[in-house]
Image 1 (cartoon, one colour):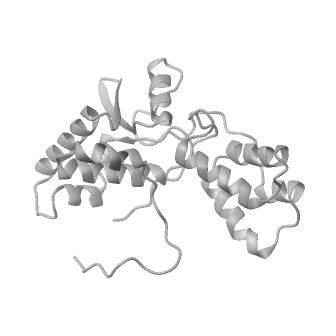
Image 2 (image 1 turned 90 degrees about the vertical axis):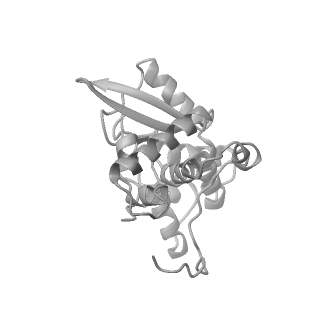
Length: 231
């Protein structure tokens, strides 16, 4: 493994983690494997789009970066690394950091894991009530009806003004990152608040991504994008 040279200068991407994790939970976690798993979950879920956001047990087991970390970098047999993953998942569920849902289809059980946030609790409750159908494996792609296509550049010109070269990249990144419904609602709020500027709209979208939309129930279709591969 190459030596870490330090974080690079300039713009880098960050993963938000609630302060409560450091103020309360960090003292309860006595397993390095559980800590690594939880940090990976925050990283992975933050890079997903839409609603709900989760990882299955098999998806976690297929992430070589995570499994190498859980094995402590040792040349460990797959069965042993898999056992460490299961122990870390059980501990995170016991500490109420993760929510586990086990779904059975055609005698095949799939374990789903969500972070215990307002969004995660809402999604889990909807699944238990039969209001939200999860796939038997993989990510949920179409759990809600997809909204008609909306062009963020048209929204900007209609509500703020001409699209300048300086704003193009920011608008494109937002369109690739957030559900259509979020973007439309953020523009509407900006207009109603007489705050017709991109900084205000962007801050709304960023807050929803971090804390959940409105009451923690984000709307909009889930993107087809997976978390980026690090293999």
